[in-house]
Length: 224
Image (cartoon, rainbow, N blue to C red; front, side, top):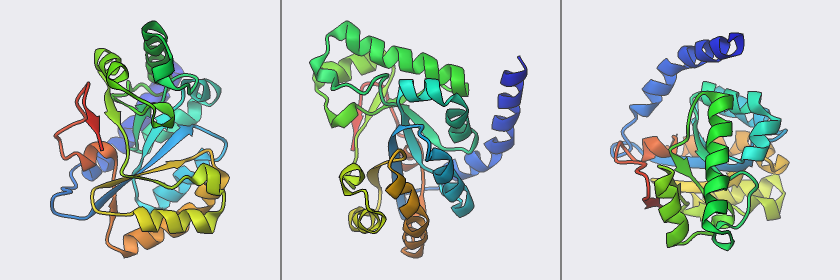
């Protein structure tokens, strides 16, 4: 009960800035959504600190197994006003699974995230970007929208802060969605410079729901 009370208080304290950020009109300003998969990881708190200092918001697609290990970090993501999504429980290629296995991957993660953060995701991102109509249909049944991306940094391959920064700046475009990983230390190391340069170029760094301008995410729909 005490834990839930503290979480509720934390969320209440951050609801005002989060609400203000959600009022950003991406039809009037140049918006960009930075998204991070596979966490929460050991380096996620450092990323959250960078985003908070910059007044930037992002979207985190959380893996159920990782949330089980680091529930407090998952709660911190939500408390700081970032958006969260479901990235499956064990990070498999969903199209290779049976229907009931896909449902279990999504549903168990929904429950784990809800328990850790007090929020139930309305978005999911398929691991590796592997998806098909069957996966999307099952996500619809789970009341989840599918969120893809407009560009990926391939940071897990680069593993070099300078190269990752260059990739982000190359991929940046208005209303874009960039895929990164908060579990890649080089990405977290690159983020202060990335955020500084993107803001210099006039971008507002927002969550995926803010980018959708109130028109989504809708369950069973695939975006980007």
